[in-house]
Amino acid sequence: MCGIVAYVGDKPCRQHIFDGLLRLEYRGYDSAGFVCVDNKSKRFCCHKEAGMVDIVKKMSETVTCDGSIGMGHTRWATHGIVNQVNAHPHFNCSRTIAVVHNGIIEGFEKIRASLIKEGHEFCSSTDSEVAAHLFSTLLEKNKSISSAVIALTQKLDGAYALIYMLESHPDKLIVIRRKSPMVIGVGNNEMFVASDFLAFSDKTNQIIFVPDDSFAIVTKDNVAIYDFQGNLLNVKIDTINATYATVDKQNFEHFMIKEIYEQKHAIMRTINFFNTIGSMVSTDNLNESNKKNPLITHAENNLSLWRQLGVTADQISTLKTINLVAAGTSWHAARIAQFFFEMIAKIPTHVYLASEFRYMPLFVNKDSLFIMLSQSGETADTLEALRLVNSLDMQTIAITNVPSSSIVREASGFLPMQAGPEISVAATKTFTSQVASLYWLANRMAYERGMINLDQLKIAQDDLFIAAEILETTLETNKLRITQELAPYYAKFDKFIFLSRHINYPFALEAALKLKEVSYIFAQCYPAGELKHGPIALVDEHTPVVIFSVLDELIYNKLVSNAHEVKTRRGHVIAFAFEGQTELIDAADVAFIIPRVNPLLAPIAMSGIMQFFVYQMARELDRPPDKPRNLAKSVTVE
Ligand code: M6R
View 1 (spheres, protein in one colour):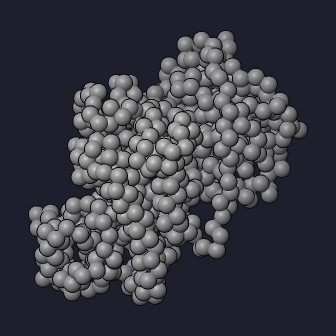
View 2 (cartoon, protein in one colour):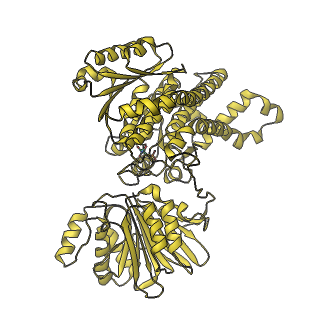
């Protein structure tokens, strides 16, 4: 991953770079670095250190050098441990070339070995440092910067967004993009470059999205973009009006808990917004009496919705399969949604892990729809999967929380969730908003396909709002017990087993991921029916078993049997059960009792308590829930 921010212009760059780095913290927080061509000495002045927010704040107080060209980097370590030496920028031997890098240079070991043979001395263990040394040899061998860049791109494999600064050309940023994102902000006698335009959204709204496989030579008053063959490209300037909002924790201790509490409203805002998509686009064309007719408005809304999604009503009616592609928590939401599309809209649905998708056989089918699900819209695995599907000319829809993201830009249509910025690395409100969005979409499709009528469509939406309400009320009623009694007790265990069946099995996977992420406690999740096929060997009094119930009588009874299987082996059961499920509640050592909801919305109803429970465990163990070790909010490497 990593975040890059750079500036060339007629103003001092230092403060802008530090501010930009703080805005890009979501891309990695292992280390931070800054380099400028110092106005006084005309030499590079560089500061870098392991750590992030505190380091950047410290640097902005202590670093005194400044210049009209500079760049900064926030790292998510891929090659080389987290330390000062491996922090970016990196330099060539004579320290006249500085580079920052986002991505992974594949096969860098070979290039590094041959450069060492030629006499280059490396300081770090990163793949990125290779880019500095290699470019210095290519600059010596080539007549111009452009031809050296072209030669460089022929030697480097993998994904990279690179910015070079040359001490000998203190007026130029050399920006190279292959797969990893890079944007240029056009100002007045100044240019901004970054991995995400939010880094400079307060400075300009005139944006150039650097095309894939191209490079730019950026000076304060000009941007020249070339493809990797050296042809000048005519790239348009877009106007983007999104701004970076500083989001604060209000009175909460962490963003994670604030975001857990925001879920009910995030779901409601998202669904209410989706409902306006049709009317925003279409009701203008309706006469007044039709506008008041809910049937016509709904039907018309659906048509406009399909337009927004880049499909036609006919395509929805004749759809043969849906494919959901996602990673991490988004993949869990997709697995839950498989039940929605299959049970409500009767459309066979496949769910793919984005990181595996590209390496599996893919059958081109024009009656098939791909939905790419990603909170950030920047996840490299999902983006690459989208590009593969696009290259085969199949229909793609993005559902993200970030409307300006790469995935939104490249998909044929999109649904923008309205969860609001999610700062904590652990996804909470975006998970439940994704589940709600997909439930809403499945119902809209079912309506279009004649599977449900308007009343049922309305009930579906009411059910969603009821589940969102229950998420919040159950959290409130269990809050004290979790904080004072349960979290302190369970935080002492070093491993957990999570079990469920049917629609709550992917939810159990999400619970196990959340526990691992924020508390670093080992958690293993199984479909409960698999317990007897092996994992039951793990059950003992030292391994709590968390069971999430379901609202299907037959499946519930099987779960009750699974709970007894655990108990008879001296296991310890924590049950998330629904009101009236006395068999499970009685079998459990600890039970959370949740009001009954639409059975397909059980994951939403249970999310609040589950997330609050793992959050409190993290607190007990003194983990930083907003920024767990080794993670980043946006995973932009494959
Ligand atoms: O932005 P995305 O939804 O595409 O991110 C996918 C995963 O990286 C993400 O869900 C990750 O698993 C979260 N940290 C989970 O809390």
